Length: 360
Image 1 (cartoon, rainbow, N blue to C red):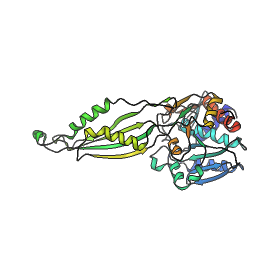
Image 2: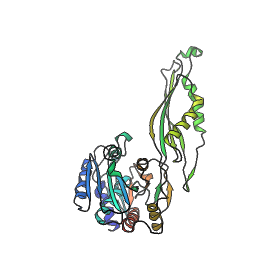
Image 3: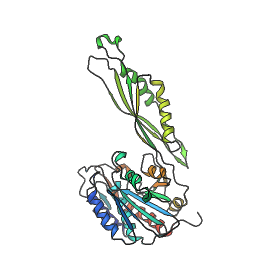
Image 4: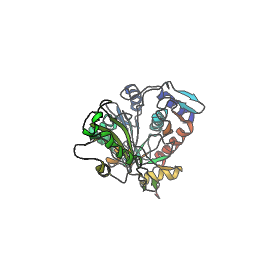
């Protein structure tokens, strides 16, 4: 497999449009390819594909990637610019799918048992996730010792991930005519002190497994007002909190509630809109240590949220490792380089060929 082969396979996958909820054509093509490989058993659950080796190895690695993309932004069909493929989903994550597919073709008797997971609807709300669907109806298909997700990391390791907590706080007031404002209570004015506190918030930056994480607390949306001559009786603010993996989702929610408590009073309402756990870095696992050491990979903390958190909740340590630059994901200029594809392929090829170091 040459870098040109990987580039062209990536371009072929990019050209099969697979915006979230419209992935069946791509999934059908992948299913046909995987079922043609007689060393794999293949299960399809909705638009999710799971292919497995059953060799009785001591360890099983799960290699996973999502098949959907964000909406096309005048960036299809794929095009080649030098040694890069440009197009919707090239980095996030058709390049990763190309690497997975070629590895599945190549490794008929890998040193580790392998589960290949191609899952749907990652780019939309969490309740639509194809991986969540598998967890609900066929969790047995996700069993493994370590999971490696092909999110774009430029071929290095991004360990763990931060959790996400999104809440909506509605502050109460009392309506009045602005000519007699003293007869009411302005909910927008109440909101002011909280917004100041949010802007002055100093985030925690804990070091975990030698990696520094960086929490965040941001107001993302404000809504209030009735009319130009009415004192507003409600003000709504949505707040997003990214928390490091040394806190559980319950601990993060308890902390956020305590942060907001001085600014709230009876009659206000706090609603948790979204809650996703963080994932502990899996760097201590021998399989991950072997992968990193043998291939000289850099290791960074994952400040965003990825599906490594879902695997961690299942008791499967997980890391992010894939071709492409995450800062280009979802942009009109999304692209992936041959060097990134080649580097990712080489590292995973080594893992499937050589397994875990005996001295690890």
